[in-house]
Image 1 (cartoon, rainbow, N blue to C red):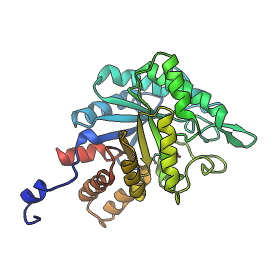
Image 2: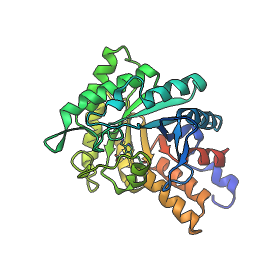
Image 3: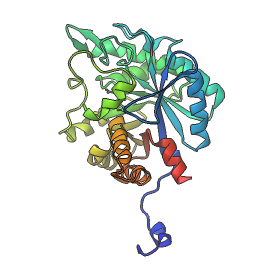
Image 4: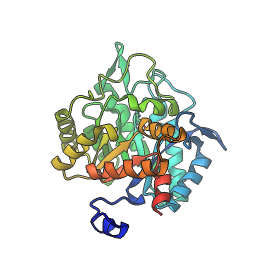
Amino acid sequence: MRSSESLRRLVRETSLAPSQFILPLFVVEGEGVRREIGSMPGNYQLSVDELVKECEKTHRLGVSGVILFGIPTRKDECASGAYDDNGIVQQSIRAIKAAVPKLVVMTDVCNCEYTSHGHCGKIVDGDVDNDATLEWLAKSAVSHALAGADVVAPSDMMDGRVGAIREALDEAGFDNTPILSYAAKYASCFYGPFRDAAESAPQFGDRRSYQMDPPNAREAMREIALDLEEGADMIMVKPAMPYLDIIRMARDSFDEPLAAYQVSGEFSMIMAAARNGWIDLDRAILESLTCIRRAGADFILTYFSQAAARLLG
Ligand code: PBG
């Protein structure tokens, strides 16, 4: 059954298509800004005008959507840029929805890009205060929905955030806005290049008190179950490649749509090896994404969205 491509195609168990991809994009203030991220070749910090062009291209390639990360010029103690109705992400959503209304616009709901200390929440007595942070997250999610976001995706890993966001969205009249919860998000070294890109590395300590401990698998199922109880419509496992077992467990345990995030470090490792001539880039892109799908992900957040769509097209 493997002797020809025609036969292999016939019995292939896993499909890969551009409709299964979401492209992460970084937006900055200004105009005409297109600043390449050193550790993530081919990815840029974009001003809103350039971001819209990138979204048009992404849509033309058949990719389903984008997820936005904002990098404000001014950061403060209370992450005010995160929930400002005229903040950088809110402006971006409006611009993208006006230019490419069919592109799914997801937003990352978190505070780390907006706080001067780089943590995902409010600092009280030297540590992130879970409950005080929920209010910021709920306000951010509502401001994103108001600007036209199709999906909000909380990535902060505070307890109770999905419930708080659901309640705030419903109260504001956005009962149709779905929540994609970063339900099983690990405290991973593979976010390194992203923190360069988003300028969000914590100024002190790390995120191990709120993100998950990599050795734990059963705990991920509890985290997912809790988020679903609180009203998550879709769930996510992150990172993807080192956590394929978690994706598989989640797929077997839950029926809701399941996303996986092929994170910055996974992208950068593949790019670096390819640039050294050590692996074939095109094959690595398709194989890594196919295997994430085989493990059970319905869709994938990946910096390779455009490249993979071209290869599949
Ligand atoms: C938090 C957030 C992070 C990523 C997505 N959302 C960084 C972190 O938790 O430190 C990482 C994504 C990647 O590495 O590609 N806002």
